[in-house]
Length: 406
Image 1 (cartoon, rainbow, N blue to C red):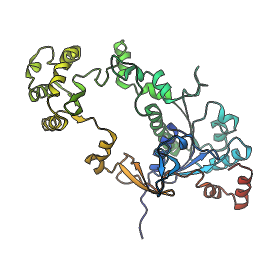
Image 2 (tube, rainbow, N blue to C red):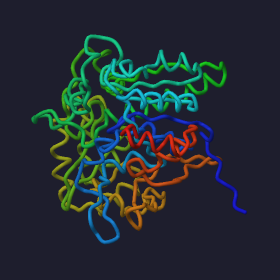
Image 3 (cartoon, one colour):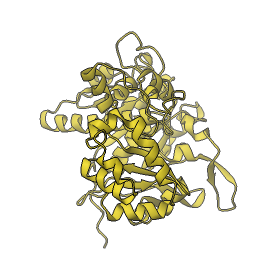
Image 4 (cartoon, helix red, strand yellow):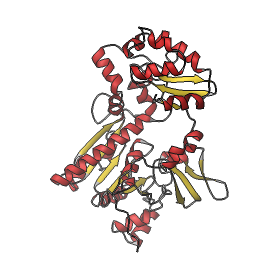
């Protein structure tokens, strides 16, 4: 008899009333760690991202299904329950499920959950051990609390776009919705901390996560650059504000990253590139000098690098211990031997297709590894199962369906 793989969050049930990305990213991490995540969706339409395509998953005959690649990226290992929480009966379903849950995560606008009687104060009054996590654009208080929050707008408001893009170009957003992803990861950490506190004290708590807060926190060294140094960091393109050379360079057949971290590495780099005179120049012997004189230093480095291709330079630099790497497109990424060796693509069986390839979880736990129990669910795929677990009989479920509650 096979023994089930132990799961770090086995026995934890999460009621997931989120959609799009920040909330689903958080709950997917919890699901990967073994929690039973019940994804609550609107009957008929479900999570907005289900329709955010193409591309869509293709069935065995090569036809598009209703499952978008966007939705599939953030919803594995969950069960889907459709409930109309705008109805009193739907709210009663959620309250019953709350009594059997450890965590509730929602990303409705401030005040919406109170209108439905599903706010933190009400639900924790019924279930004091509940960890209630709200994810919004701007938090539960402050002058912007009532505003809707969108990743690209927060990237702009939170300063990320001001430091992203070419120095002489317009501000740029990051290629993926990093503000949503940052917030989802911070929410995951907060939930795990709250569960630890609950296990120690018996009391749940309320978590107030805001996209803007997470974005400002993730300014990291550049936020400190402004607060400590007093000057506003400019856009540096693919360069680094505080280290030189630490950027993307063009070579004969593409682009590479060179990330020199100290003065010894810089001297070795110059020797390999046959520009040792630069290493001997007093303006460039220290990193501080290279930062001050980057406009003089970078052009001759760039000119020298155009003489060879990616493979030649990277082989040479790697052998000399100089941090470097290629600039890959996504086809290159998933063909990379290290990415393949680490198993960063997982194939899952799916009800509508022979196989569904997904990016794997990066979490590696020795005793409780991540297990992909099932693919992202179809809309309402587990409604009957979840309702039966909550105590509804077949007649009760049929009545809810007839009235459009589920």
